[in-house]
Image 1 (cartoon, rainbow, N blue to C red):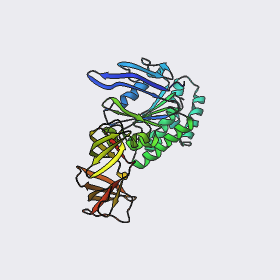
Image 2: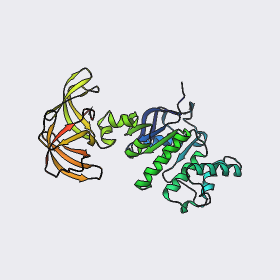
Image 3: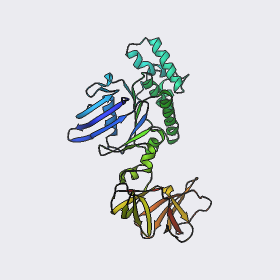
Image 4: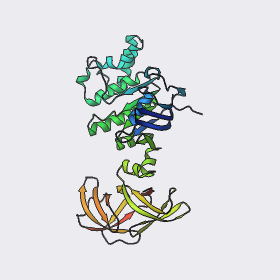
Length: 354
């Protein structure tokens, strides 16, 4: 059996009376990029610091490459961390920053400089060796921080909110660079962010945390299309959460009542009674006519043109709450107040507990 790169076994971390991480268990396979995702204060950064050895568990065990490092210091763990602030030495050149860790570990300066130059070329910064950090853009500084981390060839590379200081366009480019580098070198990466789109774009697996615990762990597609809870449906992307009644369960499916509409959906372990329906904005179709079978009448409350699609707020007849609907038909926009029929794609709706 392959030994995981990282393993948490019932790890708890307390700061006085505050529990930052509560009985968390997971494994991270070698050569994968796993994102710890969640809102501020959920425990994701504390979990990353527990991997790095910057914090030690109050309970439980942390293993790296099968070795128990629960009480080991950061220097004993063979991990590297890229911080949110980059933490570059302002008085050192780019090359000196990257080879600093190698020189500090006892490597000859000429050998360290050669390895550092190779890594700078790998991240697209060949020719920048003699510049100071202040002479670089934010994206270039981030690449220097990555080169400084990977030159040490760590067993695990950690990223703590690495793109939060960059503008939206640069964030997209740098996250693609990080993903390409991780795949090209087969690195094991643990990546912390609160940005759902960023997590979906770069991850092999996402571990979602909320209130110090892991609430769901799976591939980006599993989390987006099959949320296990109301929190996941609401947090990962934009989801409409509509109150429904499960009228009957038969085999793997349930008959669900939404206003005047009846749907047959996978019951996902829920029995008859109240529940909620999670539907992504693109899971609806709008028709410019009264509702037919399997549809429900609605009215446009707001419309926003977004280039590739129009985003509508729709009020359904007999259903509490407004819908957010993404419609690709930009050639025929609907005005506020227009009556529509709303249909739901069978594979777009997921039942979650109320």
